[in-house]
Length: 435
View 1: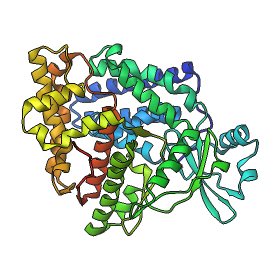
View 2 (view 1 turned 135 degrees about the vertical axis):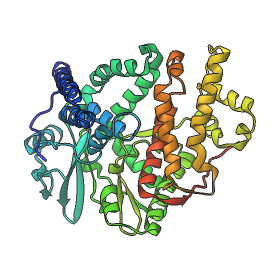
View 3 (view 1 turned 90 degrees about the vertical axis):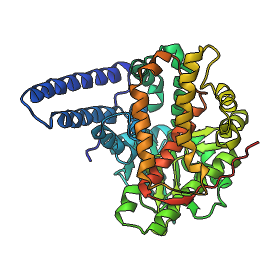
View 4 (view 1 turned 45 degrees about the horizontal axis):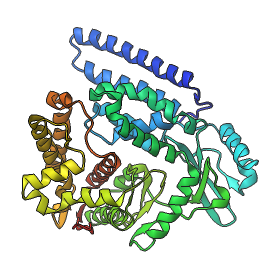
């Protein structure tokens, strides 16, 4: 993949890049209508592919929170045409890497040394490149190391990038800025945390120590002496990304074991640590041939307030689902329903969230669950399409749900998506501490 020698860092240059991409997309629509007029049956497919390529190229060059949005979107199969989600999924593994001279510049700024002066060996070509940074292989004595280098200007552009995206989000959701303010703040906070490698180092070491007793899950060791706010160094751990692991055609037993490792890891985090690895895209996991699981990248961690935990996870308690009024009271606490709702609006959103949350908690209601179940995921995708097209929901005109739900729901649906790709059948017993 061609290396990138510079990244637009100023607000004007980043905005100009997006505007230029918008012009390309406009040109693609002109071609689409022309092709459609002459009866080209593949006109829409071509449009989606061209738009996906142009938009992804632009976001890849911008990197940072702009590319992170593409990564998040790729995990939601309902949000955009398949051509786009497939293209954006590249952000999980292999965005265009930064050129080596820019890597050297970052090292000089952070350490006062070049990579080769700091390490015995430093591979100039990046092994992996994603939205916030890229990873290089290095050695120091007997140590094999993964060195993650943050892209220049990423931390400084988070707020301005979100300001560019915010109007688009408001148009899509048919909401005013004040109605989505708390969610934008939540996203901004997490993106800023992901650019803070000092924080990532701290919480990585904390979570690794806390989860060290989990069976079949392994983590890298982190090295503070080779880390700072723009560079983080850890052990190089072996393993395959999900697509490579699946290409080896693992047995059902191995798939189940890998899925169980992942399930147990998330269950332990939520219920014992009251936090969650909130970036569950496939690029953050390494699979071994025996089904054991490596976990990397603790840049995005959602800490779950105890008062929220005690309310939200009651959604798994059959007691609340046995009677609508109990469930309704819970929905008010979770801000799914609002005191300002009239009776008609309350009923609309009560039924909407009841159906949606039943889908989310369904795997938890059985001792085992087969994530290969296509019917279950078809229901999820159809529900997403239904919500997107429902004009009555848009008339509600207010964002709903506690801000804490944003990353927790995203995490669970991301987890379910990986387990679905694994086609794993696992024990879904959980240690939720329900009153």
